[in-house]
Image (cartoon, rainbow, N blue to C red; front, side, top):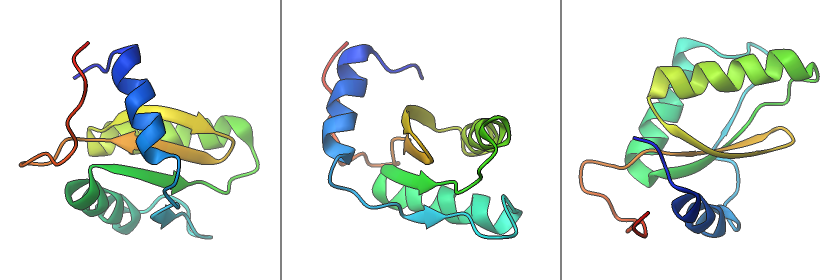
Length: 98
């Protein structure tokens, strides 16, 4: 599912007031962290994940892995915070049409 620019703008507005739901710790990206992100997406649909890695390339790789493993859409990355969206079985967010 690819998001249109209009849908991304809408999701950015919705995510503005959100706090990061998942914060990667010293162990980095583990199966447990992926499961936590997956559960948060199922429950909230739109979440922020904080990746406190200093190395930009490694941080980018971690974020790409999160997107791949959770099958979520990356809405935006601001510094070390990634905004993810994945519709739930019964979506609560109504996206605008393309």
